[in-house]
Length: 177
Image 1 (cartoon, helix red, strand yellow):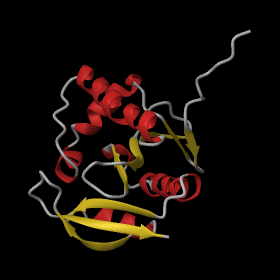
Image 2 (spheres, one colour; image 1 turned 90 degrees about the horizontal axis):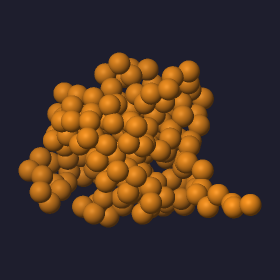
Image 3 (spheres, helix red, strand yellow; image 1 turned 180 degrees about the horizontal axis):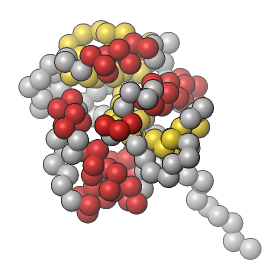
């Protein structure tokens, strides 16, 4: 009898949420998120405009990160729902020295505490299961709600930085063990 050599898909459970691996089946959600005006303003315009581009974005981004690092941005699904309402997770970026926590939510999921709950779970995962001694986050200077959330999960403002190809100065927050 053959044995299954594929590990089960990753999941984190919180009181109200499931954080799970993104798949190409999440393309419609990802397309909506990446084209949300606030996502573009505070994070970036990723230039994803079609379902096929959204599928490829998931494959090349989140799914590649799961394979390479064992973590990445996960889809956030509230209890009782089937579809993602946001993303949250840990990211290893070539442009930063430390693992970065990131998140983004659709407009209808904001203001419900989902980002805080998911971010706390990701911080616990990074500290506990991954044994990280430092976790950072970057945010645009005018994104005060994001800055407040980062402080609630234990990160503190360190300094302003510029990523190599980005003209905007970003706020760098860090948690250190």
